[in-house]
Image (cartoon, rainbow, N blue to C red):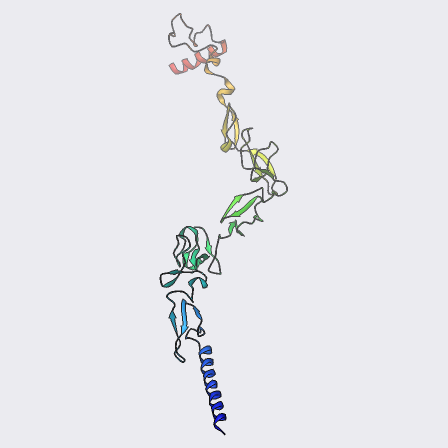
Length: 289
């Protein structure tokens, strides 16, 4: 091998060594897996650099190469990259007025495990979101925002059964009044309410139809009638009339005397019917004895 060939071989060998070094530099990553000469994603703002075999993450304090904004949710804060706030909510903090929201990477996300749920709501199985519990309609569980299959016109809203006849149609035999489904008796009285015709009350049969029945103890009696259990009875005074009517005259006024001439006593013999005089006289005689 002459000197020319030896020179060419030496140059070729040096080129191979250089290529080997280049391959080592390009393919040997930093400890977090970031390739040499590339920017780290976690934490952002760091560059993988250094000598072969000793690569390390070095902060890019000028952010000329590794910009903070290259990673979603991060912003520059001096020489560091920090998580962005969500308005007035710090990064990583819960929005107490908007549970279960939490500020993460500059956006509000659900995190019911950390931030909890609003009053009346429960954490879902995903541990992130919240939902209102089902309603209990006399043993039948009704999912939130769904009409009850048991009670006509009822809907589960935010954990409570409410009247919603506009969205939950009344079943056959019932009448929609506002948002309520009800049964009406023949005089248009709602079921469970007193009729204007005392002492009647509108009740339901076992089949769900309405009928009127006496309920004087709840609905009262007409004028001149007395409550007698669930029924109304004639008033004693109403049947006999007033004391003045019985005695055949009007009671004396305040300025008249029983014996004076300015008024006539209801017990004056001349004004009493003969039969009543006999009754009164007999009563007086018996008292005297």
